[in-house]
Length: 107
Image 1 (cartoon, rainbow, N blue to C red):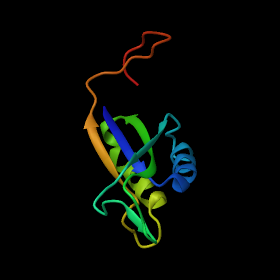
Image 2: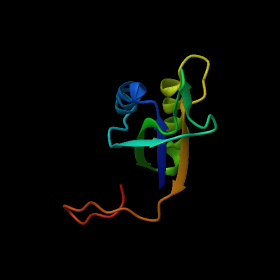
Image 3: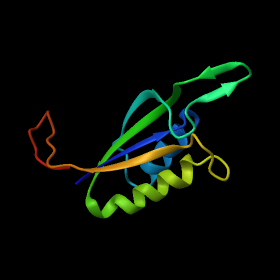
């Protein structure tokens, strides 16, 4: 199993989640996050914004679903030709998972 964490622009969250659900991946955790990437924030006029609002989507999937999930996220989270601030995707191994209500192991 893998944990895919996608940090994307808030205005792209709805379409990414819709496309993931349509592709058979409806289980998603969404969180508001703040940070900066390579662009080190943005400057508008004389004001510098050091932390930019983003949303993080977390999806646990089987290893063989990774490429499909990443392609869906990349295709729908990108703004135009791909600009700084579009986000990042991180993939980590998941050792195990349990459903709290049933105690069932796995996805």
